[in-house]
Image 1 (tube, one colour):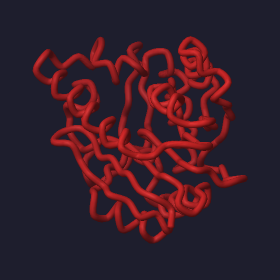
Image 2 (image 1 turned 90 degrees about the vertical axis):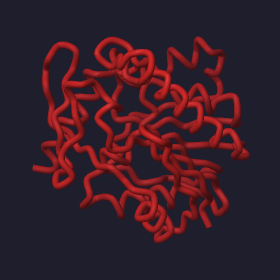
Image 3 (image 1 turned 30 degrees about the vertical axis):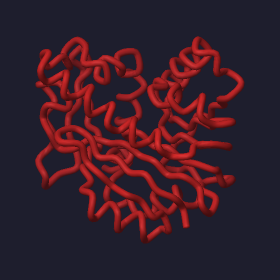
Amino acid sequence: MANEILREQQDYYNKRSSEYDEWWLRQGRYDRGDAENTVWFAEQDEVRAAFTTLPWSGDVVELAGGTGIWTTWLAPRVRHITVLDGSLEMIAINSARLEAEGHTGRVSYRQVDLFNWQPERQYDGLFVGYFLSHVPEALYDTFLEKLAGALKPGGLFAMIDGRRDERSSSPDQPPPPPETEVMTRRLNSGETFQIIKRYDEPEPFTEALGRVGIVADVHTTATHFIYATGRKQ
């Protein structure tokens, strides 16, 4: 069952690629009105400010780079980014965005099933945005070990993901109940998919990272985001 959901999850993100940014930009069915949207964007800025304090440099790997929301932010700050993503559709959008921004030489791409991925080298930094919540609980500790394995000693670690709040998505996609990690997602077309969606809390997440040798400060914004900054020991 778990493998079937992971395959369906990848299919969902392949098909969602062309509408993914509507969520981040609060457009279409993700538009929650001026007041709620203002909170969303202010909390985005809070997270960016925290990431900006890190001394980014060298070669960085970005897991699940998606449409390039964070790739474009990282590119001017590092020597090179290796973007790993399971979706060719996402990679195409990401690479077009980076080319338009003039960062083509700074970025390379690999289509990778991240659940079967094994680090082939160590990097100066690792960024993962909105992917850890899609890793099943049964695979979680092993996946964090792979993150640590992809970092050089002293390498930077940063992540952002979502908190359990119904306002963080569209009204027709409430978070799953706490007792399950499977939820239904919808495309604008109405087509539905089953995906994994978990929600980390700062204290257990900090401890889980520590067990694999990543010492991190984990924070939440008031409503929408959980984020972490740290280093591989």
